[in-house]
Image 1 (cartoon, helix red, strand yellow):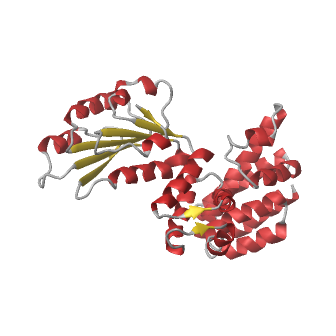
Image 2 (spheres, one colour; image 1 turned 60 degrees about the vertical axis):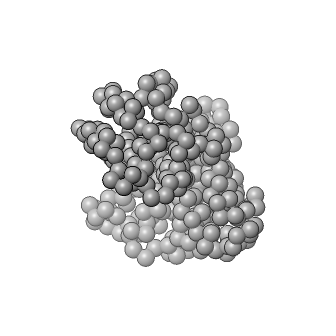
Image 3 (cartoon, helix red, strand yellow; image 1 turned 120 degrees about the vertical axis):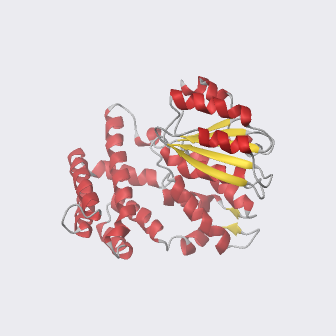
Length: 328
């Protein structure tokens, strides 16, 4: 049974025996969140998590379910695949399903499933499965669902700020959401100005705010924000990630425009939303393709500097990169 986020809210692992959570990398945070919601249904259960790599012994899970819990608790096995089950691993999963009952439950996590995977018997045998693609719809659902748990509401403009802040990164969105129940009482309506005052002071916000500044061509504010973030080279990891993502998006935008598209028609596919669309339009008009390729090379060098594999000043290189992006 295929589930969407709305039907997943009604799905219960107490009423069913298994579920498959499939997600692209960008939606890994939501995948984990859905898994946590399923576990919250149980009290006093025994949870065992398994990371499946080549050569993994599925007999461990079979023994767990066959022997039963010492204290008659519900046993839940969480099986984490780095990608998807191989043909041999799929056979092993099929040998586990007959052992599932009200006392033995199974949660399977995989990467994105393709059309061929959807017809596989190991998936058909599950009680339900959901595919997460890292979309704007999923981000909106996560905001509403998470805040509803704490009896909080959020204005449209405030929600848009969270989406702009995290630029389609659901893992980062989840981190920002976790702060809100500690900042506001139950039944509170979170407003745009609340988030500007409380969330925008974080280094995470500054990293994404920095993105907006250099995309718009404001070098002075870009360097000021970078100085506010930087204490040590480790602080540059999120900045490096944001820069790399933006440059790759700009390269994709130039390719799409060359083929007759425009930024607004492809923005959702690139996880560019809200005010960021205008920022990317400005950057695309200003920055040449050659500059973007040169910046990619420099970003790779900075990555090695942060890891200590290459000598040099990572912060100086980042400032040089910002200057290149602003000047185009």
